[in-house]
Image (cartoon, rainbow, N blue to C red; front, side):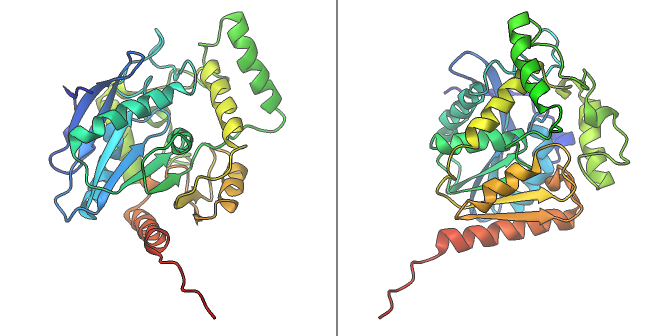
Length: 323
């Protein structure tokens, strides 16, 4: 895997010093982008960040700074169809993928590139929203990590029960009739974070972090993404349904969920974590979808819970047999 230098908007990312971006080419010829942030602290390991739909490397600059201070290096990815990666339709604002498993091609490209970055071990996964769905599938595919953190994972999409059958039917018929590239109902080309008011937004309660996200996409509109295509919606529903039939992976996991989550399906998260033997679900009271984009105290709490859970599960020694 060849690492070619790629643009990195350092000023707006506000990540650790020494951050860089690279182009990767996937096995099916798509160009994606990764970002790498080093740590100046004593190395504790590395995090692979799998972002959500509409997201991009620079959005995780502040989080990388937090993790770098704790001794972790960070790699984040622009999935195909978003960020600066190849967009897949003539209308570049449509969130689209041909088949959901194509994201695993992106994962394999990232894994192929890791040896050249010489990341400190162990590796951990941090998957947000759609990245939580992609990450869960990657765990079943053997992603070489010691533990996983999920925030607002897309293990189901929040759709009112009365319209869920229509969503399935619309996704299926759109392919047959040739309009699967159209925007899903109630969405369009506008970027949510670029246009929504802070009041009652579904992402974060913290105005500074909201401004951080908004400022990035306004400064670099090429990073903006609108709503998903009908085809993406159908593929996402199929993947969530398929994952729901599988047992939990055998590794430590901690999942964070805002109590005011309004984007992904909450019952699927509770169901998954209730049956994950090495898993823990932590509800962030009052939190929205982007719990890692809440205030500094919330982010610190998330780090503390994560580190404690991994220490308990990864460093625990078997109990001695009793007579």
